[in-house]
Image 1 (cartoon, rainbow, N blue to C red):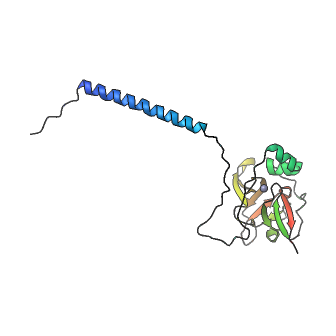
Image 2: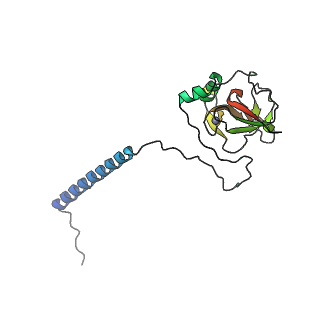
Image 3: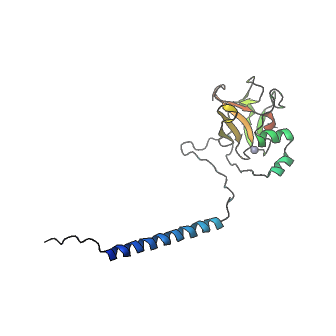
Amino acid sequence: MKRPIQAPSFLSVLVLALLAACCADRMYEEAATESETQKAVPQEEPAEPSESVDPDEPAAQPVANTITPVELSDAEWRERLTDEQYHVLREKGTERKFTGALLESKTKGTYTCAGCGLALFGSETKFESGTGWPSFYAPIADGHVAEEEDKSHGWVRTEVLCGACDGHLGHVFPDGPKPTGLRYCINSASLALEPAEE
Ligand SMILES: [Zn+2]
């Protein structure tokens, strides 16, 4: 014979309600303590150099992919860079077309970041685009040139930045020559040229 289901007495409902309220209180306290502990931990730990390793594509990099992030204060950048370099690299400026010192250069070598010296482009990928800015069809190695969507000036472009110091270099467009079909349109002011040893 089944026992009839008894409606919970008023007392047990009250006890349950009190228990629930008590638990909720404790959970709240624990949560509060936790978030305070987190606050006490110093923020902005120095980021480890992030080496993006693609498991499908091991080795075969033309340049060793060890990039150490370069972080300087605004004052340090101002001291290190010329006004034009600072304007381009740190303020995302654009030099006037056909004015860059490295625009016409045919010297064999490595184009490095004028801010931090990271190798960015090999001279063998430089081509004459006719745009008035040094143009390359490929970065020297993975991770050396970072990309970011740029929605300024009312249209969407892909900004390219130095993989180490985050300095603005220029933009990349999908209308370049073979083999990549890409055109890295780079400000001469953001580059330095290290001539190859003959
Ligand atoms: Zn750099």
